[in-house]
Length: 236
Image 1 (cartoon, rainbow, N blue to C red):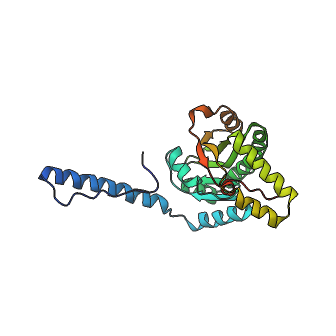
Image 2: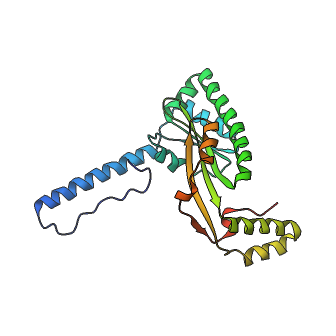
Image 3: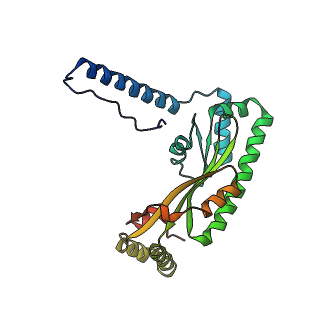
């Protein structure tokens, strides 16, 4: 499977011991260079003027969503784009689907209705997860070249010790003035904790919720978190 980002081009040794090794090295370099060029083309999507205008319209209409337009063929490739999102929701659309929306008003409205419904359902899903200890850090949907929609969620589960530390930080925010709270944050910024992360995909929001609840966290390695301010906002 090809990656979207970070290709490294093979560099042959300065001195090849045999002509065969030199030819193999050149072949490998050409193959990897071709892969890098292919990835670069995926990064640069050519859109019609109509599709560009539609993208601007969607970005204006949905201020809480990051929209990405890219040609992708796997969940891993899709994730490389979706992970760049900084807003409440991320939406990845295949260029062919965006062009179809721009060319036909009924098709456009069909997908907009799906986006509206998904935003409502995903918000409700996150509310249901609050009581179980899972923290949904990024959520959204993808539309492939055939117009099929799928949903994803990046989920974290923190240790009870770190959860207690976060809750104490929030309480201190409520009790102390802003300046005193900032000093408290600085003093406790390196409190250690553990967090586990995973990404879940599904064909519906209900299925997404089910899969999140069925995640086997025992099979996921925990990462140490040292800075409380890096992942959690104690502000109120």
